[in-house]
Length: 140
Image 1 (spheres, rainbow, N blue to C red):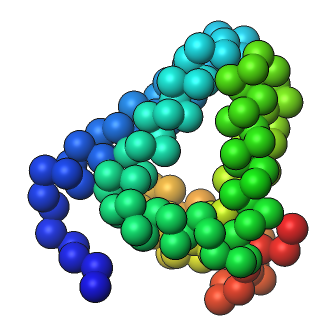
Image 2 (cartoon, rainbow, N blue to C red; image 1 turned 60 degrees about the horizontal axis):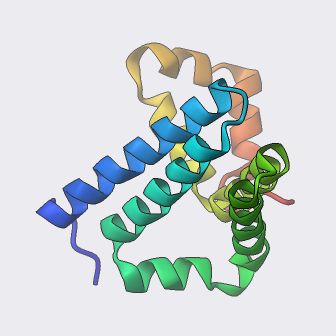
């Protein structure tokens, strides 16, 4: 059963996730600084775990169709930690796209409802791209 109320644990989790994305962005801007990238990865993963819970996180990452993304993301994290940040971030980006490819149609609907950006995402070329993947996983 998923609860949608915002308790303190979920607020802290969303904050950690946001800081994780911010530190990862800073790590990329500062020419793949491995310290910032590692901190961003740790904060992002711990934030997701706090937001949706440990059991849901484990179920999400251990799904059979998510194994390729989980292994890519984990190997990318490992390569960032050992000092190969560019290769690690490439693997993490691939793993992120594979893991969260089921959410792209939901993201497309959300982006189409934003007042200024919605107009851009409702253009025929962009809309046909999103309609092509609606209701199924993005092939990898």
